[in-house]
Length: 478
Image: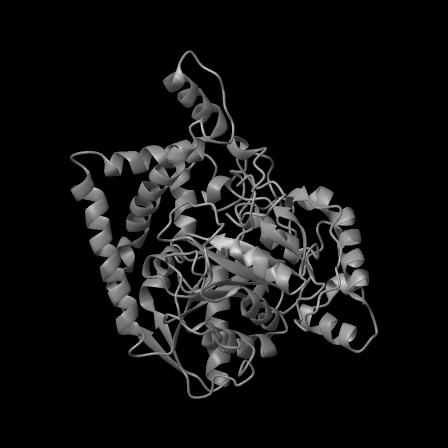
């Protein structure tokens, strides 16, 4: 079997046994990139000089090639956030997660495409190009971490980092048939993550099976004094107990997530997944989360307000693109008009409006109160059950261009995921079916700092499903 088709865990065992060396793994993945990247278009920047470097590390990630979403700072490697306004920005420092990966000898092969500044659900809003879903090149890979998900699913990386503000790891993972973890807010350092909405943004992990996801979490999770939102609490070994099964656990089904708008294919796949958990010995309980109906409106008020504030720094003065004008105001206006896409400008204007005098209390302040109610729903649910099971998205991957003219329809793609970011809790996306040759994802949601439990519950399903570590054909039929 070609090395790019194997998991991190499998390859680490082969390296430990002396069968192969890390350089062979990197070369195998590079050859895969050369073969399929022209069709998939997962990358913004490919690091041609990347290679496995000998380090004193016993980590399974040592020598393992992966990719990083282009809104995570990498010293000496440009970080564009998928935006023309940062086309030539080269950070002078690494994000904390990059330092931690470097410390164990992981290999970064490149920076992946994304919706500009994380604003989108399809990777069609990139300032550079559209990334294709490797299972069907006419469809989107999801967003905004679509490049990271497509790279892993197509065999162009063994692992990837993404960011998740309202579903941007979990939805691409579902659309591309891989595993995506959105950790508890504060569990993984945000230092070096270019901000979109600071109270919602989270760095997380994408891999082709659950065990590899646990290995990657073991490296990047933990307290960081440079991040004021970081949780100062010890981390577990996320691989310990991962095979303990689900017998005796209580899995909740929030009825609000299984209603109108859910496609027949997704509904059938989730129903079968629930039955699998019953067969494995879990107790299934329906739970009520009444404030879910307000989540999408709440999210798009808070996220756009924070985006309006965070993106004010791109004014053509400090760094990034500068378009000269008659005076400093004209220069700033021209810079932002040419540097930002239509979707980014739309969200900035929405956020500026909700923060403006006379509307702050009516919109933003009210949204913060509803956010608290949504968090209360989760707190109440976890008094009844151990984890929640929901869809990731109401449909499978949609066609490129299908929703670009209807922003509201695009925003509805996030309806099953934004609640998790508003509440700050962890969630895991993993494939639960392949229907019409496209993946269907399910979402497992846990209480704060329950990542290990989510990985255990996900692994139990994966062990019976046969859906782990599938490599997409990328239009080539194999």
